[in-house]
Length: 316
Image (cartoon, rainbow, N blue to C red; front, side):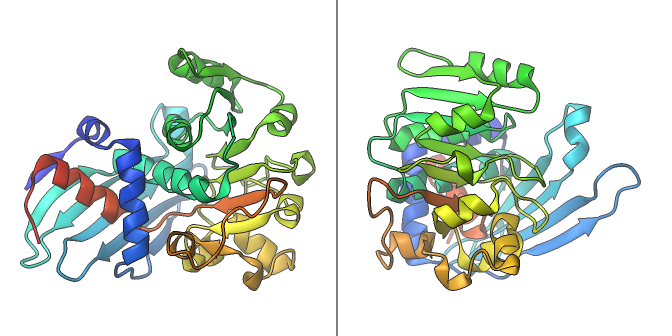
């Protein structure tokens, strides 16, 4: 069995190649049992979450990801999300690889948002607002920049010094990156707004949005978490990564469904439908598009297979 650390994952996964691997997997599909989602009580602070996410394809490898989410880890200088991914031989069940789950999750999550943007973001989008400064932020910025000609990135975070540090680390020739403190103004000016936070109170107000924008919501993965308000839902054409996952787990979708702001048949499509041409993506320059990602084991399997292929690890 090959143990693959995070640095190897980042070195092996090219953004464009990963986006195309996800596109191909959404087109072909795979077996996706419901993820196991368990709340772990905490004596101090917010409860933690344990996720188990299996997936496989007939005649191909079997994969399962074990993830923990501890919201209070930031105060300890640790990532909120940690985990590992096990890839097994589809013919024998023998372990092929144990892959760093944090790196794999960050890369496939960013690739899923970038994949959605190929259908939903305006072709001429050049200005990105990144809301959140955690581990996902640089990957989301890179992912969006790989599918659209992004020239300027604004970064907003609850802790301004973190936004400033991230901006300094990413600023380079051809991509102007700066930290901002006025979230409303930055949102109004952006062509793409990408959010990766653990907030339970919406940060993005629909009243700020303008015609032609694309809103990419990544952070909220439980029904209690939410990054954009009802007005954003009302004004936008709503898409998700998977109908089954988002309508059960993502607060940005479940809360509007419960309140009646959104009806399930008003969700325009998911990544299965978009990649297979079963629904239209952006239909006009003035349309506001809204993509909610909650994550799926399909994305992990596609990314893990690409990693082992790059390394030449054999398996059915």
